[in-house]
Amino acid sequence: MDYWHSINKEFFYFCILKILSKMKRTKIIDILKSVDYGRETLVMGWVRTKRVSKNVCFIALNDGSTINNLQIVVDVNPEIEEILAKIHTGASVSVLGKTVESMGSGQSTELQCLKLEVLGQANPDEYPLQPKRHSLEFLREIAHLRFRTNTFGAVFRIRHAMTFAIHKFFNDKGFYNIHSPIITGSDAEGAGEMFHVTTLNIDNPPRTEDKKVDYSQDFFGKQTNLTVSGQLEAELAALALSEVYTFGPTFRAENSNTARHLAEFWMIEPEMAFYDINDDMDLAEEMLQYLVKYALDNCREDLEFLAKRRAEEQKQKPQNERDEMELIERLEFVINNKFERLTYTEAIDILKESKPNKKGQFVYPVNDWGTDLQSEHERYLVEKHFKKPVILTNYPKEIKAFYMKQNDDGKTVRAMDVLFPQIGEIIGGSQREENYDKLYSRIKELDIPEEEMWWYLETRKFGSVPHSGFGLGFERLMLFVTGMSNIRDVIPFPRTPKNAEF
RNA sequence: UCCUCCUUAGCUCAGUUGGUUAGAGCACCUGACUGUUAAUCAGGGGGUCCUAGGUUCAAGUCCUAGAGGGGGAGCCA
Image 1: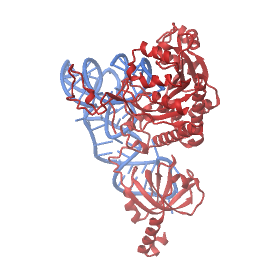
Image 2: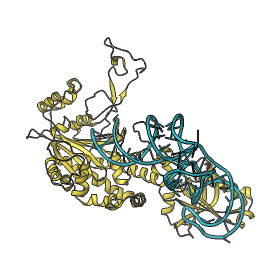
Image 3: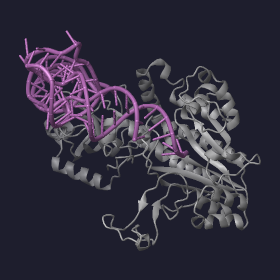
Image 4: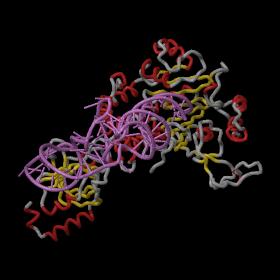
């Protein structure tokens, strides 16, 4: 303290400025890792909490580099009190200080403040975040600020790690990343309603003689949409580069109001020449286990925070709705156990004989072969019967897409769905039909406009090979890894029916 | 789109069979406190009870419609 008053103040500030101008910001994660005490350090971040008493003030500072806060210790004097008065939860500050071993018990390293500067105030009457627990619903309404919470900081650091791990996984295996188009001219992908893309004036579009909208005058000279899948384009690339993957945004204009659907989401679609359905399943399983392991190895603290959060959430639930495993245990379980593989037909047999079916507890009783499985059935298989991820194969062709490889039985196709606890279908894929005649007849049967598919069909005409692929919903993977329960909380700015805020 | 639940202070929520001036914790402001950990203690300010109708002597509470949100279902990833 005496030091402050005994030296020439102007000279002191001059020195500080000199230091500041040269000094680089250190990230909080690096300060907390180090035991190199006594070092002058510059940090910047956002204030989580401020605790003042007569002589000393503590500021918990977070810069997003880690879930942990750095404790700033400020010796209170009249001069600094003026600055402290401007600091509330949410304010951004720059702190020049000395790293010291903490006298308190909550942390090992802290920063003894030498100079404190407010970069941006946060008026506490207006700033909506408080140092307490908020509901996820409320935070969704302030998605521009929710990054500043522990939960969303953790979620989005993990999201980055998963993005990176996906590219690393494929790169290490010799796959090539393909940028499939976002705007597509075909309406034949068969994966649901599409968003139209147009530059026509929708209030008064040009019309043809029969009063229909004249898309020949539109930007692309035809009707265009946002992509619902990059699969067909990825197949074209795979039939030359052997192993490729796409990882891009996907748009579905379905009126789906659930905790696992988005109108705009990110999908990973690998597509591999010379892979049959079993190779496809092997890759899907290997990839999911790799990604989960990557999260466990690289996002430990964030996962532990989310695990604790989830455990508290579980306590609020009635006993029969609680998870049997806590988050990290569940992740470890997935990487340590083989997925259960069975056919659709075998699944139907299990479901027919299951207790809930016999007791009439299913809303949709299982009687006949050929109907699609409802989520209650999938959940029974995954959560009750096998208690582990399940891969279902060989579905009836009527309930699956036109491009799937037809089996010799004439009834089923080589589809595969990977089902996870809580979230249901995380991957949907198949071996693709490489036989031109079979593919062509299926297109005709389903009235898919041939003129839009000529390029796809040509790959089966010239050097066709067996090939396979699948689609992994990135946000569904995020749900599983983070243990969050609503898909709107694992993407920064969710787009859902009636909601495109931010 | 269907079923169901919810909407009360900036936030999280209580509010009894319809009955006087609608409460608590947190946040904020003031004061106390020599190192706190979502600090603590004392005091203070803060309300379009989602909106519009209706029933009633009387509505936060009951009824109808609408808006927004949650959970479940369908569609799927």
